[in-house]
Length: 145
Image (tube, rainbow, N blue to C red):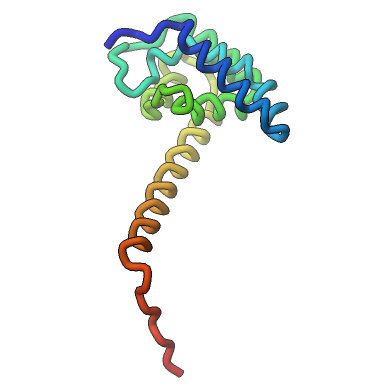
């Protein structure tokens, strides 16, 4: 698979920041993490879902160290919001970044676990919602005294 041009990723990120700025509560958070998004851009080639890249480049590892040093919260945001840019993140590959780059970002593991937990819960809630539309009038069990 051909790598996405870095300029395209940066364009998506810039557009995302414009969307976030519209929401006053998230604006300061997004602006504080903007450096993290740009530092992590070199890792997107490695962590995207259909990536055939075997190991991250030196620029990726340098960016990962910068992001981990800046704020673990920002690193979580970067991993969580990859799909907003049309770049589905492979969480298994994201977890491998710390060992491949020999970077200390242990809390990154907690981010990935939390993101995966939320995906499972979202999937569960979607299934439950589909059952509600199929069988809206399922009777409740009557409690015996």
